[in-house]
Amino acid sequence: MIVLKTVDLRNDFKKVSDLIMSGEIVLISRPHNENLVILSEREYNELENPKKNPAYNILNNDSPSYVAEGVSISFTLDEINAMENMSIEEIQSLLTAKRAVYNNIRKPKRNIGFIKGLPEFPDSFFDPLPEDELQLWGL
Image (cartoon, rainbow, N blue to C red; front, side, top):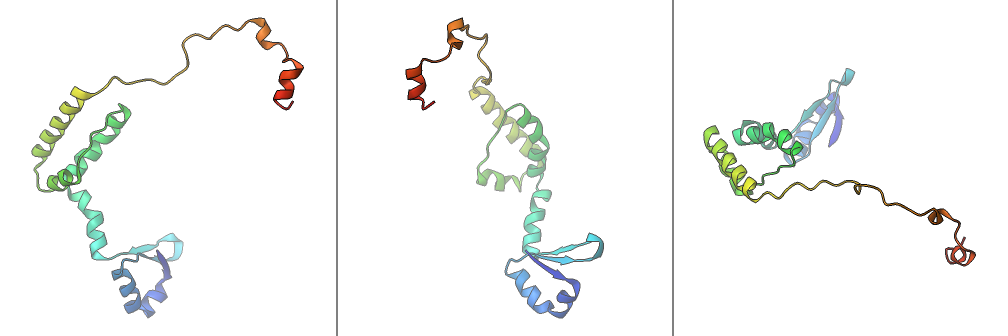
């Protein structure tokens, strides 16, 4: 990212435009932190595509609840690209089918935690170590 002042943009517009078209993102610094970002139309469209893709929005809206439940459903890149041309109903039926497959092969959730109940240690466990043992440990 290149940071420029407004005057730099005005003075070298052609040069800045060439930088932007080569993939560079340009930030125009303005007073009161009212900065602007300039990027190419291609990059803008790449940013906007997910917002226009109903599949992306459906998946994104459902994601937090599924993550909290420890559920994840994967899609291939081809499936995601195909969703761009699907109706919302088609996407929802695809999601339902994927969830059904997932639920059929889902393994029980394993919890990580402490051992139930603590082992009991004899009082001698806390006795000082013998001298030969301390020497082995370099103490």
